[in-house]
Each structure stands twice: as C-alpha cells, then as structure tokens.
Image 1 (cartoon, rainbow, N blue to C red):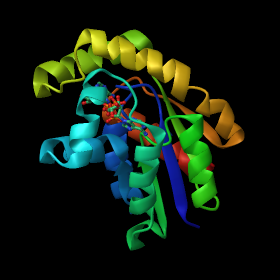
Image 2: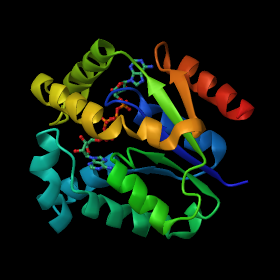
Image 3: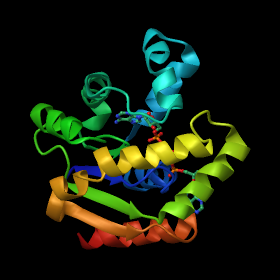
Length: 185
Ligand code: B4P
C-alpha cells in the first residue's frame, strides 16, 4: 500500500532531520515546503522574493501559494507510490485543500513531541551552525506561537491516524521509535 505520511511537530522538533532518513528507509520522496521555499529564496525567483520577509519574520506563507507549490509537486510521477510530507499541511486550510485535490492524501501522521525549551535550544544551536535567518530567538518564539495557533489544531483534524512519538534523545533513537511505530500501525 502507498505510504502517505505527514511529519508534524513544532519548529525544531526534528522533522527535517527525520524526514530525510525516513524517506530513504521507506523509498518515498521527501517533500518539504520549508526546503522548497528556502530554495526559491536562494534562487532569487519571483516566488522567493515574495516569501523572503515572511519567513524571516517567522510567519506562515499564504495557504494559496503553498498549496499551489505542493499540488504541482504531488503531480510528479515519483509521488504516485507514496510520499513523506514535511511541513505541509501546516494549517487547517492547507489540510482541507490537500483533501480536495488528493484522495486519501494522508494515511499516517507522525507527531514529534518535544518540549518547547528543547526546541528553542536546538534552533539557537542551528543558528550558530548554519546562520538561518529565521533562527534568532525572537523569530523562534514567534514561530512557536504560530505553531500553537495554526498548526497544532491539525492533531485533532487527523485524529486517529496520529502516532505520537517522543522526539527527545538522539536522532537514531527517535528514528527507531518512528520505524517501530509505523511497523505496528
Ligand atoms: P520549516 O523548514 O518546515 O522549518 P521548521 O519548522 O523550523 O522545522 P525544521 O524541519 O527546520 O526543524 P528540524 O526539526 O528538522 O519551515 C520554515 C518556514 O517556512 C516557516 O516558518 C514558514 O515561514 C515557511 N513554511 C514552510 N512550510 C510552510 C507551509 N506549509 N505553510 C506556510 N509557510 C510555510 O531541525 C531543527 C534542528 O534540530 C536542526 O539543527 C537539527 O540538527 C536539530 N535536531 C534534530 N533532531 C535532533 C535531536 N534528536 N537532538 C538534537 N538536535 C536535533
């Protein structure tokens, strides 16, 4: 059966990190709206210029823009046999739009559970290592508020297909918890 998985969790929970490893293990494409938007900014494309300041402020890019990008990506051949969505849907509006365009769009939601102070520390460390423009403390706090207000309601939206995984510990420990949980689901 096609694996259609959504990785959910606050900024810094380890979604990007785990998605890369999981997509490899499950042989499905890793579709990250954050990566796609950052690459548009790096390319200086029309889209990139429109979203740069929104992302740097820790706000969400508009649903219409993100939905259009994902619709196009999901229409590619490699997404026919499953995918791992990382960072999308991030609002109820995006989830409804996805349901309208793809039948049975999400089979399983993996929710990474990490306490707020830990995610703040991880993102501050990444700021030191990588210098991402949205990883300063003020923006991180704003991204967490946006997560609570706009993204956390997706946990109820997806209800009984949500697998909650303890996201604390090493990357390998978290990965193996996810793999065990997926195998049992
Ligand atoms: P994202 O790229 O999705 O970024 P994120 O929420 O910060 O999560 P990320 O994947 O980076 O963190 P991770 O946990 O992997 O979004 C960035 C911005 O793009 C958004 O704020 C928004 O503006 C825009 N956007 C994206 N999608 C959108 C959408 N659908 N709608 C509207 N706007 C959208 O990693 C964090 C750090 O923790 C890393 O340094 C990693 O090395 C470290 N780490 C990971 N696992 C660890 C572990 N077990 N222990 C210690 N450190 C760990």
